[in-house]
Length: 226
Picture 1 (spheres, rainbow, N blue to C red):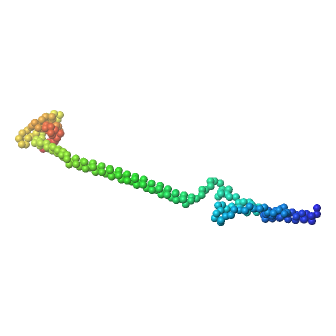
Picture 2 (cartoon, one colour):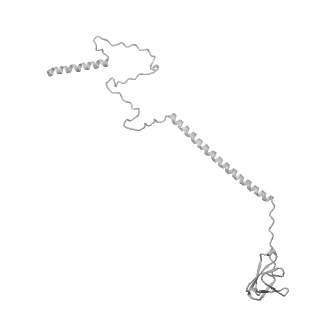
Picture 3 (cartoon, rainbow, N blue to C red):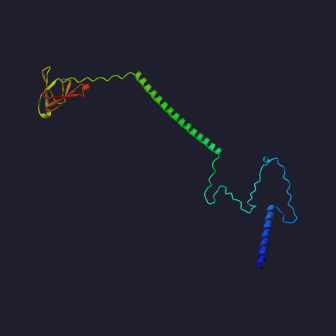
């Protein structure tokens, strides 16, 4: 086949394709003598406000393109959970009111606890004051305890040690009564004048005690020559 024939066929094919595309988009019938199909009459409308819905047709498929894919806010190259949409004004208002209610409840609970503590402290203070008043009233009504008896001092021992008689292990103390001007002798354990007892005899002194039970725990040391 020659090159001229090929060129003629290519031009014819391009023209036929162009005619088909024109007929598809313009609505012209491909059959000679055939008219356009009749379109039934649409019902009358008073205006656009009476339309419930408006059809939306994308011209992309008619022009041979690809419709846009709606990802719904999701990135195919990013893994993980989709972030939730931000809260609406109504949700924000409900959240604000809920937080105010929570803070108000916490404040009321703290106030109740504070009042309970203050009430407990007040009652404890009143109990202490009542106990103090009771003790004071009891002290005012009860008679004071009797005073302790004053112990009389032991009577003086009017004896003067002037010397000893006998050996060291069985000495006899020699006393002189200055008032009566008499000499009195006494061994360890003996009673002199019915009132005094010789408790011990040393080298230069004698320890004297009392017979009276009131002064039984008292004693006096008489030095030699005094």
